[in-house]
Image 1 (spheres, rainbow, N blue to C red):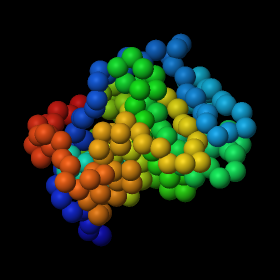
Image 2: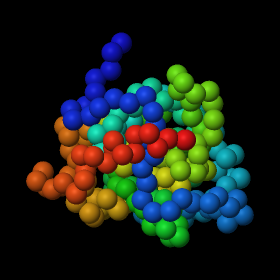
Image 3: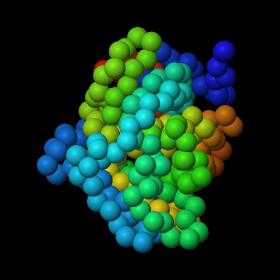
Length: 217
């Protein structure tokens, strides 16, 4: 069955590399994952504890705000819902912020998402992948190793976090890293919901994906 590409997107078979800041160098001894916010009790997990959680495999489409779309990439990882089982969230929680490493700050990157969009198999913290041209392989450091959140295809890819480090549960929606810089709070690729102000566009936006398309591991 043919895929529907969102408006303004260009299909690629590659997995382009785009990220903010430096590349995290994995250290298993210091790596940790925190679940906090509007929960009865915060939880902090070691790398081994995270990797002991039940695993899932899901095939997803990725749509980047810089205008590329990649269909049918298969990931292995841990569903968001598995982390949700580890805490008791407080009443009226409707949103989350997903965190990731950025320039030495363990929680420097963040993205906001509605909680009700994250219960399915397509909301996954991933550590390895494959597609038609690649057999199973670990995601690389530039792609977010050892753990990266891939959002459902109903969101632009910036709503995921490379070098994932935590989940914060919220009762009110709260802007993340790119949302604070003019990007959309809701980020629906099928309505070209890229920016909070439709007249806003960062310098060089249209060319960025072309510059990065061949920069793939």
